Amino acid sequence: MMRASHTQPGFLAALLHRLSGIALAIFLPLHFLALATALDGAAAFDSFLAATNTPFVKLTEGALVVALAMHMSLGLRVLAIEFLNIRERTVAVLSGCAAAVFAVGLAFLLNAG
Amino acid sequence: MTPLLFFAQRLSAAILAFAVAVHLATILYAVRGGLTAGEILGRTHGNLGFFAFYALFVVAVAVHAPIGLRNVIREWTPWRGATLDAALAIFALGLLVLGLRAVFAVYAA
Amino acid sequence: MAKDETNLHVDVWRGTDTGAFQAFDVPRRLNQTVLDVVTEIQRDQDPTLSYRFACRVGMCGSCAMVVNGRPRWTCRTRVSEVAGPDGALRLEPLRNFTVVKDLAVEMTRFFDKWEKAHGYFEPGARAGQDFAVVPPATAERRAADAAIECIGCGICYSACDVVAWDKDYLGPAALNRAWTLVNDVRDAGDEARLAAVSGDSGCQACHTHMSCTSFCPKALAPTYSIAGLKRAMFWHALKGVR
Image (cartoon, rainbow over all chains, first blue to last red; front, side):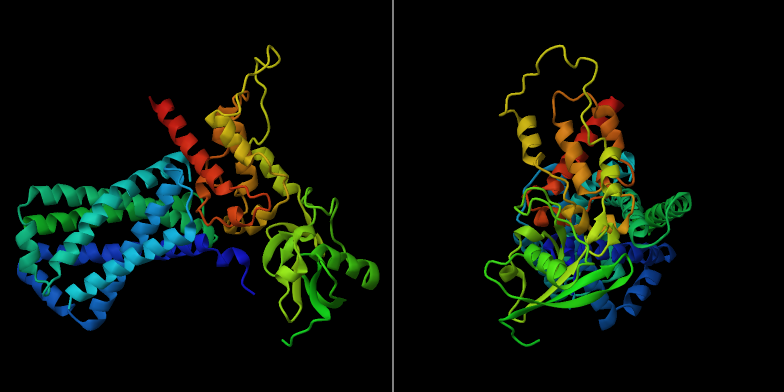
């Protein structure tokens, strides 16, 4: 039986916030390294971009964009509770965050195709 | 977290909220119809405003990510104390160096 | 599990931090509370069962335990609310406390943290010189009043995931009490108190899961008290830097 604290919407928010943060922290050094291939000139950068233009990579990129949007919107929730003293109705706030995140993810996948 | 780390975390979060919004909008705009180096570098090359924005972005990330990871590691693994702090400081430095290098790379390419 | 309208099937934790669940069958009764069930088991079926209660009317918080995964006051929990048609009930001691025996837990560490958070009144040097005038409608008094009704039952502490992850975390109850004192204009101990509630196991460790606020039987909101402490620290530090 799942403990009741783990079924709370606030727990889900914090968990998603944390997992997306971990994913981004792992991804970032790779992102910086990828961009720095431009140091070897535009052609090197281009060939890197071409090499990573696979469906798998596109999907991962989409997931990372979603992770970024998720981490930001849930982070804004934390900032609002802590500094704006907003009494939230957690489920409503989370639904708003989820909607924003999916909109961003969808926009990315539609545009990147 | 000590108060100092906490404020650094929250302050960098506020900066990142703005920077990430801009970055996401840029990504969504830029990936339309595929992405080439020429397109990216065409926007970033020699662009001082771009350079300043992304340099600030990198500094904020180099502060924000390691402090966040510190919480996760302290709470979800047995690792804590001075060795963890030292490792994360190195990670922060790494992010800073790699990040600024990347920003410079697309500015000067 | 099959529907049962006559009996409850109660799994009760026996032992200390190690042990096992023991199964009991208890007849369903009208307006039964979970405390009624535990009492019936101990008096009629197994006198070796250990549990706590006192007022049995929802004022003292002594009967707090985990019922079907959620920390509650058993005297204020109707069986009809928590046992499904199959009559299954699962009773465990509060989480995050050391188990003394069966359903009774050791509360010492919980109250030690209360003290560590400076959850006590500091009269200061000017105490006793005159009456303090505290209009009830002031912002500070309203903030203190909103959080003051805590009776130390431990449900928030039991529900808190950060307490489970960090044994040193002061916890929602202690921090909530510290917040009421930060807002008490008669109190002179804020300097030391704000230092006590910061640090790695202080208010900054709260990640707004909000289980404490969800489960508090007195409808308090430790999450917002803790947020208040974070803000208080911020302004305090800013003034210090100036």
